[in-house]
Image (cartoon, rainbow, N blue to C red; front, side, top):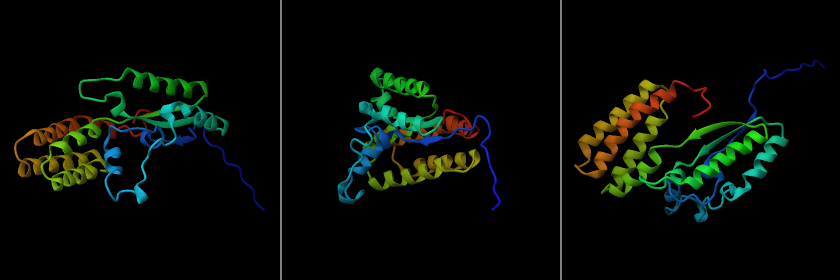
Length: 203
């Protein structure tokens, strides 16, 4: 029987991908926490709850398993609603926690690929509180989802422009409308730049 041997190139990153909400546990300040508490979202009313308890320190066990399994990288995300729990407040404990995670990866020879979660998590909560009709909130979610799953910067810009136009035509003057317009402005500045660098280690 013919045999062949294939080798990965030098520097190839072989690892595991994780998401903060899936592994940290007790994350109660973002839109996913609100979503899973809505009736009918999850069978039998389940919630993320403790998850893998990384916030309680069990990340050490998982990092050990990854290193022992021959991995050399790990993708993780930072829960921005922990770092900035309120618009005018930063949590030094949360920042120290993430620094500990990065040091833990380094000690085990695992290269960190960090995803920074920013902007829309907190904004969605504020918009939801300010929208007078849930139908408006549902439409906003749909339009933002389409924009952030765009295949290229030009499509993203077009989708954000459509959201802005819809907002101006549909929503009454007030805090909710102004919040969305501000988000559109920030998104056009920041998101297309990130889309140009798909190989960056900070995503």
